[in-house]
Image 1 (cartoon, helix red, strand yellow):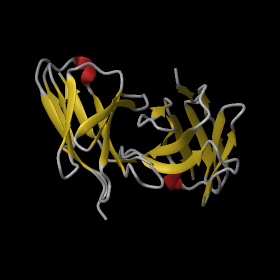
Image 2: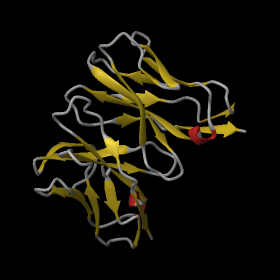
Image 3: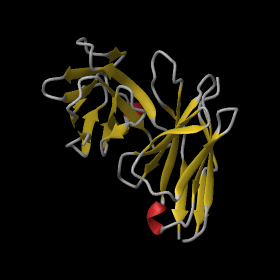
Amino acid sequence: AQTVTQSQPEMSVQEAETVTLSCTYDTSESDYYLFWYKQPPSRQMILVIRQEAYKQQNATENRFSVNFQKAAKSFSLKISDSQLGDAAMYFCAYRLSGSEKLVFGKGMKLTVNP
Amino acid sequence: DAGVTQSPTHLIKTRGQQVTLRCSPKSGHDTVSWYQQALGQGPQFIFQYYEEEERQRGNFPDRFSGHQFPNYSSELNVNALLLGDSALYLCASSPLAGVTDTQYFGPGTRLTVL
């Protein structure tokens, strides 16, 4: 079974500092996609960053970057220069190539302190 | 460019009743997926619709059914509601033939079953 584990239920960071959110997943497949989604109190799930498993280069989107370790099945998200607007639930998700189903972790609540 | 929209925002039903939730996909998207997010959990995949057909289904009972219309909008129907059906129901759309193949989420419908 495909599973996604986010072991830290909550984290906090000071504004302007850097924080890393961890995620591990379990699959025997080699072709898949990984995602980080952000869900603020407004409830809308917003895509933060996406990584294709066949790409060795780690994805980067402005202040957000990932550390993708395929052999270790690890996919962490680094947020640099944290802003108050980054406060939200963050979900790591996985999707097999050819499947439509996103498998989510349980999420992690990020608090940003001014 | 309108994003994914869902209606209604909130809904309260009693056990045994039936409910219909609605979703309009993002412009240019032809595929709609539905997810159930229980409180404190990550979203769980219910099913996906493309070309008015159910393409893939998650581990949900037959009480959960759907429909997709020629304009790509979709409905989620839940019959014989149980207390455990109380959740946030998220709709996501994607361009099946698109380059990114990423799912974009709507704001959700909060269903409360009393």
